[in-house]
Image (cartoon, rainbow, N blue to C red; front, side, top):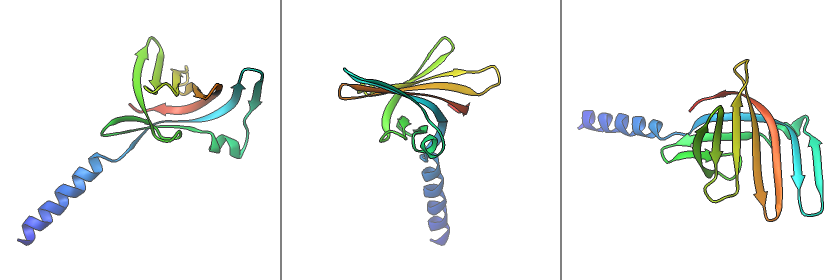
Length: 128
């Protein structure tokens, strides 16, 4: 009985590990542009705001998640040199391109009502 319980515990632990979220991409924003009907604002992002507005894409057993934005689901597409992660409900997307040095530049575009917010920044790696 003890061997069965030990084997069952190991099986549950291994299965639990396979469903853990994996970090796919993490990026630090450099600029933000907010656009609405009557106003456009472009800001350089520095210091603690870079941490507060970072982009984080993860993957779990159900697919890709926009973890930095309420864990919204994302669909992944490759188009030429660009990697796209698009929210199927239409709230936004992340567009990545690999730089010559192996790092990535990204654009994160979101909508909120009739306002759009776009972040531009950099990340170190993409782990699909």
